[in-house]
Length: 81
Picture 1 (tube, rainbow, N blue to C red):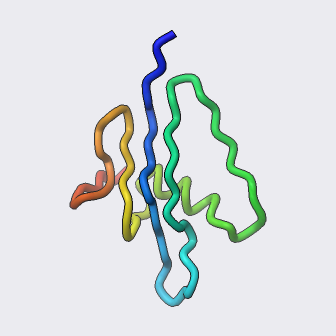
Picture 2: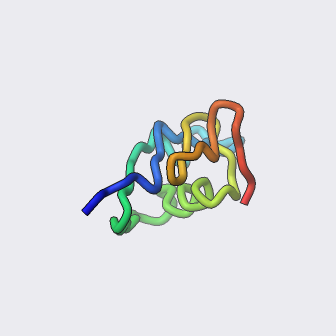
């Protein structure tokens, strides 16, 4: 079976104004075709923010997002949902 990366996050960071701690802090991961991802953690740890970043509802301060090899966020690129 040929595995190919369908979603790649590299050093993704999002900090909301007025907050001292980033909601998402340098998250990196790669999902291959057929992989499943579960996000677990306590309330307020950044699960929803990470999903909103991937979906394009939020813009990160730093990092990149690639979907099937195409940059959708980062390095002066941001494709809205």
